[in-house]
Image 1 (spheres, rainbow, N blue to C red):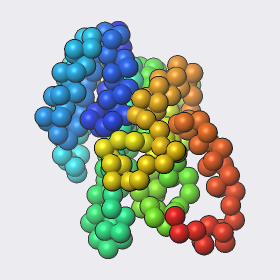
Image 2 (cartoon, one colour):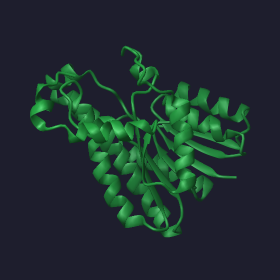
Image 3 (cartoon, rainbow, N blue to C red):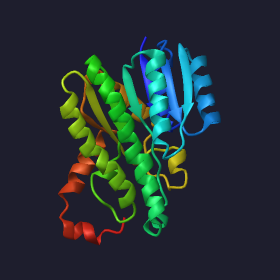
Image 4 (cartoon, rainbow, N blue to C red):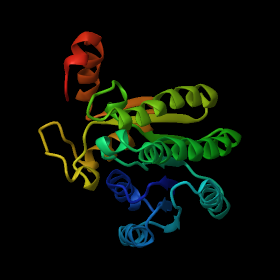
Length: 244
């Protein structure tokens, strides 16, 4: 039996990951913003064989509430084997450019609260000298693009954060940064789908494999590693002319 602590448990990737492990008699502690959706996720996991699935809600910006939800999980289940931070939002980029409050919300949800939760968990993993801390970033964080540089910046910060946290916790504790390409999910419902889109199930499978391998950073699907390597090699003068 393994204990899983999930932040952003109603996200498509988190749900796919949890479904993949529910049949292993796993215990889940699920944190999210929507009570009814969390309840539905928990009920589904119990049907699939989970030993338990407990939910806690937190509203954006309630840092004390987030730490309380995390602390409740550690008191109830004593220890966790895997922490998965799947919380995130894909903003209206043009609206963010014209409203600093919207930009602040993106950074709060995608970056600050994820870091806060990871640091809370890291202290407990560090004392046990065990655990896997998994944070979902994005290929968008590898290089700024005209159409989504605010979202990209929120994910790029996680890259630097994970690098430092990994140095602090190694070798006992794994820190895994996951960089998915675009995922066909409710978050991208308004975007035109292309051949580059993947599924939540594919990303979840890649996460599970990376935890077993004790990987540090993965791209999902794997071909994005090559794509982003080539994009990072593009000279700035060329990138500046791109309108994507």
